[in-house]
Image (cartoon, rainbow, N blue to C red; front, side, top):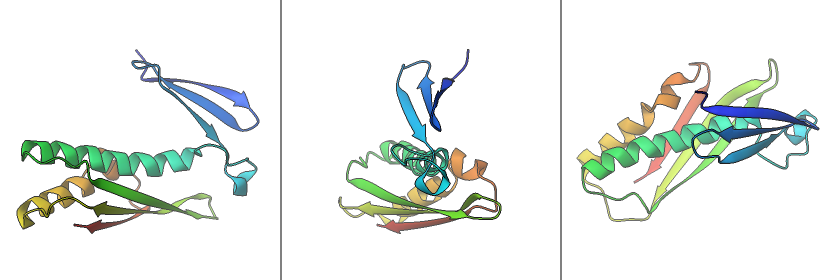
Length: 134
């Protein structure tokens, strides 16, 4: 069974549907590549996947330690290279407004983020700049 079913909608847009849940998302080419920039671009999804994967793995670790990460937020900046056109760098900046973590838990969370499946799957030429405000 496929994980995702997708279709081209025309005008440089696609729709991807998650088979198990039925949730759908749209992509649009970015403004700097002939699109309207009205939805995530495919490379935006790569950057978003990195941040979401990092947090998912961090949350698994935190739950094992009896800690909730509901006060965690993050911002992602994607930097494109022009020749060849590809992602050059993804910057993920985590902010935490909850209670202070122990140094041991803080290190476990940072290690978990840096070794999430998406981080490990990205081409090593893509720079991953990760900052933690905790």
